[in-house]
Length: 164
Image (cartoon, rainbow, N blue to C red; front, top):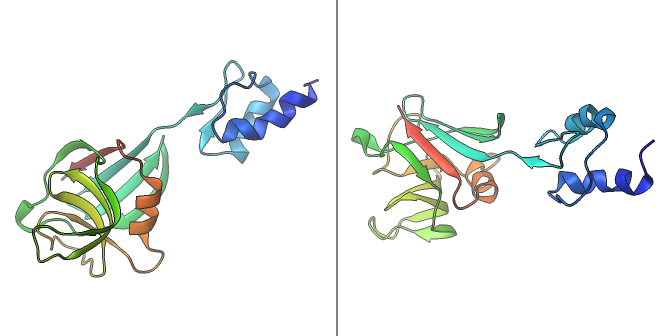
């Protein structure tokens, strides 16, 4: 039988404490169902799953993953005339919830996350289902405000892949 102190540490494992002892094998399936955003092993402590963002310019969709788990999906509007660069990037270093464009008449760009240079993922009130920006990736601020949700979830350094 598991010692009470180890049983009490299981919830702490879910929030990232790694100094706790290994979990008994019989607890692994139950904890994996309860804390779906973490993986558990009977031979080691918590293993965090990496965050990543994938942007499909053909379908005008953004998907955010933590490990293999899809945590967010939203429509986007990218740069017209192939104005959005493709490739692999890392979020940041600049990230600001109240940014204004230095290139386009001080236009508001809420929930801004830098992708590269002057290209950002940011909130916008009008997000058509086709490319309409100068190169940035517009994310809706309406409804459940996916722009804010992405901003709060995404860490500086998170991989961002943009492709057709």
